[in-house]
Length: 96
Image 1 (tube, rainbow, N blue to C red):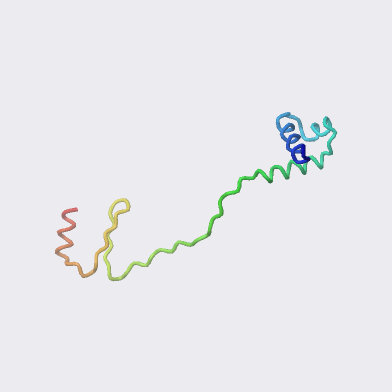
Image 2: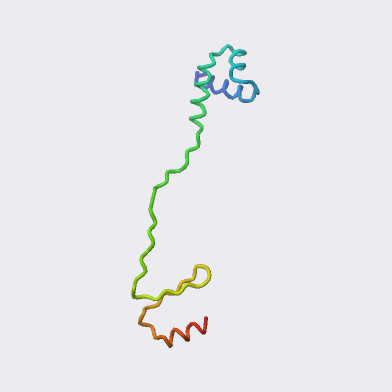
């Protein structure tokens, strides 16, 4: 059995023992500082790393000056050219 395997077995046995690190080390004749280092390295190896995120900036799109934007409920947006006939727009709004 490798020394890293023995360390893992000791760490898992300590975790399930309910004992303090110092008490476990006394019982098994281990150096408390060395055992603490084992535990720290073991925990560092078990850290779940989150996926890498790429920072980005979201900038609002400038509204073109040659369009008319009508917002409805929710996410509904109607963009029309400014050249649309007012009469046609009125008829459209009546239908909505």
